[in-house]
Length: 192
Image (tube, rainbow, N blue to C red; front, side):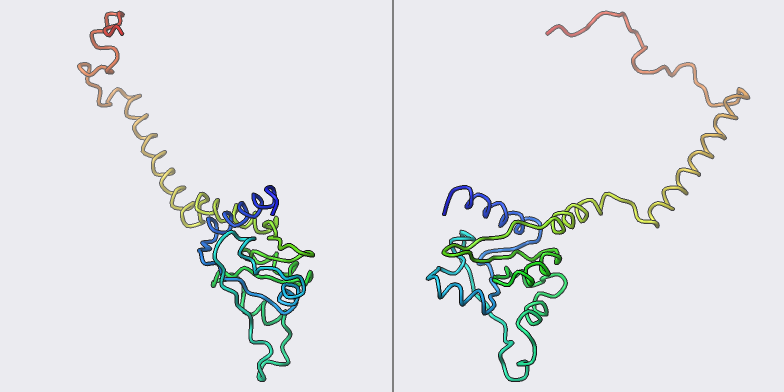
């Protein structure tokens, strides 16, 4: 595997590990087209592409009660909306890969001739991570209303203190001076 390709794969694996909590040994969910490609080209199953130990999984879409369900639908069902099991999906089906790019935390593996490739995160996946990182920084409506209430109360208290100070009835103690004006001779005390 070339150095640039290895580096790109490491970055992708690190992205999914850090952002979505993928851990070793990685689980790879394979469909029939991918397994056929592996056998046809004598490829090792995804261990070199991920640079880590791998456990291969397949779905049970060929079992008698589910034989009427397509392979794509079965894989989409296993992945669900959030890929809670942290599966890498290995497929040769381009349409399925396009569908799964719209699921936030699904890394995709595919084969070309005699090599396996790990797709880089889609723009949707990157945007999802950015928005989920920024979400705690934004205020909810409830927090915003509480903040408005506090600021309005604080501004009302400040207005009352200003009125008291204007009338000359404020709490002013001439013995209290700001710290930096007491006995200031204008010379530096520390030399160093």
